[in-house]
Amino acid sequence: MMIRELRREMREIGIFGGRIAISEVILFSIFLADILMLGLIDEISLSAALLVNSTFVLFFVTALGFLQGALPLASAHWEKADKPRFFATVMGSLIIAALIAGGVVTLFAGYVPLLRMLGFADDLLAEAQRYIIFILPGYALAFLYIAVRNAVIATGDSSDFMTLSLSALLLNVGLNWVLGFGVSVASITIPGLGIAGIGLASSLVEIFLLTGFTLLLWRTGFRPVRMARDQMRQVIGEQCRLGLPVGVLFFVDSTLFSAILIIVGRHDVQGMAALALIFEWIALAVMVPVGLSEAIIQRVSALRASGGSFQILVMACMCLSGLYLAVLALIQFGFGINMPALFILEGEAHPALMLLLNEYALMGFGVAIMYSHVIIVAGILRGLLDVMASMIAVVLCYWVVGIGLTLIFVEIMGLGSRHALIAVLLSAVLAALSISWQLHRSGRKFG
Image (cartoon, rainbow, N blue to C red; front, side, top):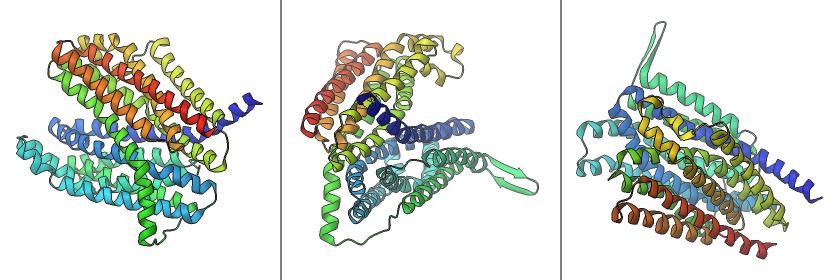
């Protein structure tokens, strides 16, 4: 009986979460496609866009965590068929997303003057300004997209996620080419806009995604509702209490790699490049656990609302995560394909860098394993509304252990990138152990 239930749960989460996970990978590929297109223009355009996007990504990832505060609440209301409270929760999330979008737009209005004060080159600033003007609408809509997408996930239906995401990727590539480089068909000529065209393409793709997911949400029966001021304050406050710790967790997670690269880059540029490629691969690899975790939050919240036991669910989550990591291990070590090295188009021209990537392969894979485990377990805890523990564990382990040990190894002891990666691995192992212990404690409370 238990095996049958485990297989059923794995199948349900695998289908529901698998669609979300694959859509996450596809959407991540949109960013990679933008980088490829910008690299074909010139190095200044690529550098300007990377600089602007690196700042936006920090806001986006933090908001991604912060807005997850609505997901377990909306999932529980949907499971209980309490549509008025579900509608109110979604409206609260949209209000928070709109406020975040307004704040980010305001900050980017002063972004180029700030860079000028910091001494950045004028040609870089000119390209950055052109890019910001055209991509800023897309940046603002991206936060509303998160809120709408979370609302659809809360209903337990991800059937159209892959279709929308793949369509967005293809649309992005096509628009990037047409608007960035121009096209001439018969007597019709569309001039290329360079970096401005790439930014405009991103904004148009964001409009497409937001429209698509809004239609999916509308199909569930959702309609905007008016809320009294007291009700609005209660709904938003409830989401902020859950979302703030998760937002901090995502912020810490996104800044760890950047901090490590900055510390190592001051002394070892080649070592920094190797770590950057490994971290880029880890970020891509954990997109699947990130997608699964969003499905897990919905499933755990639904079980919590219905009073069901979630022990089988936990086992199913761990089995699915283990299967995914086993496939990655087979590719990496069974077939001998060093995946971070695939980001280098001409590996033979960089023998020393390739040597470092091969040397660091096992440790990099270990970090990916620990990160995946932390993401999956944190998703279960969020579904149980237990968010403070995962936040504290990540802050202490990633910042104190990860960055702290790297500073000691590199700045004080004069060691290199290898020991920086060891510090990251140790911090990830400690985070995985501490968050697993918290899951055990929470599991006893909820059965």
